[in-house]
Each structure stands twice: as C-alpha cells, then as structure tokens.
Image (tube, rainbow, N blue to C red; front, side, top):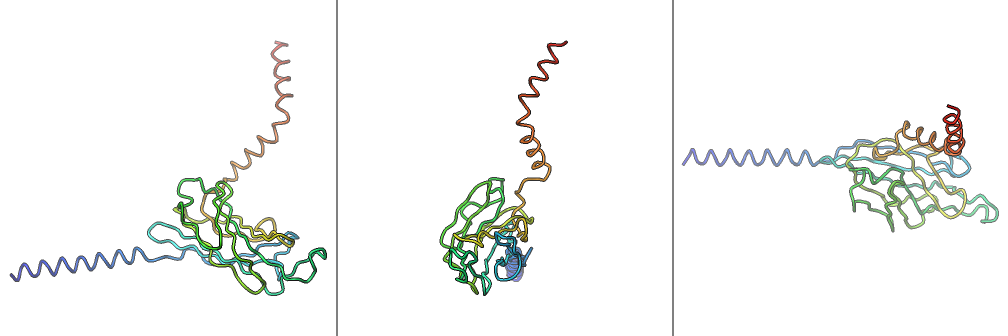
Length: 213
C-alpha cells in the first residue's frame, strides 16, 4: 500500500510540475514595446500635428500578438482655412502595411479593436474607430501572426489635412510581421517596369539584327 501511495504521489507531483511548465510556456513574452511618430501630410513629424503610435508585440506559445494605439496630441488643429483654421483635428482610421497572404503572416479572424476591421491582403490590415479628439487615444488595435516582427509602414487618417499621417517619408516605422517585399525584389520589379516602354524598340532591333545575318 505504501509503495502504491508513493507512486500516486509521484504521479501527482509530475502532473503538478508539467502543469507548471505549461503555464510558464503560455505566459506572454514581450518582444517589442515603444512608440513611433507618424508625420502629417505636410511632413511635420513633431509637435501637435504629428500622431504618436504606441505599439506592443507579445509572443505566447509561438503566436505573436501585435497591438497598437493611436494618440492624438493636445493642440492638434485643422490647418486649411477652408476647413475652419484652429478647429480640432481628429483621427478615425489606422492601417499597417504587410502582405497578409504570406503563410503565417496573419492568423485569420484575429484582428480586433475599433468599430471596424478590414483585411486588405497585400496592403495589410485596416481599422476604423470612433473619432479620436486631441488629448485622447484610440482603443487597442490588435491581430495575431506566426511571423516575428520587422519595422514597416503605418498610416492614420481622417477626411481633411493634416491627414493622412504616415511612417513614410518623414515619420517612424512600427513593428509588422516579416511579410513585406525584399529590397532586391522591389529593385527587380522597378527595373522591369522601367524597361516596359523599350520592349517594342528592343524587338525591332533584334529583328533587324537577325535579318542582317
């Protein structure tokens, strides 16, 4: 009986140990956390006309959770007189650029936050939310991915300037899954497009060379 009791105790201890290990495995590990500035349409990347994006990337059991929140600084105003100079500017949409069709880049159905979400495929993910006035922030906008982060472009918008705000060319990038075009691929695509207008000329040249032979 004592031996049997010891076996049960040992099994119970093993189960408790395994349970502890599983709990440790399931705990979220912060990979990246920080802020980035999105420049307005006029290239302003500081002060009240820019936007601040807070981001967090957590890893839990092999799944990366990407989260963002868009802050509209105090003092942000509409610039064009036609829109009522001095009136508060709002922001009500946000997007991150990466190819969601790349295997593992986006876990289907995992996009949350805001009043609406949209998967734009090769152009990334989009959220809409209730207007964020100066001095306030958007809700947390999240999605899950199986791919580790790399820096990529983000955009925020409203209907009037200084919207849109963006990472490029004057702002800062945010973490996105590693599913964006490689520089070499982009360069080859640009070269191909550059050569398109000259294809007919090249064919005529090659045809004349063949006739001469």
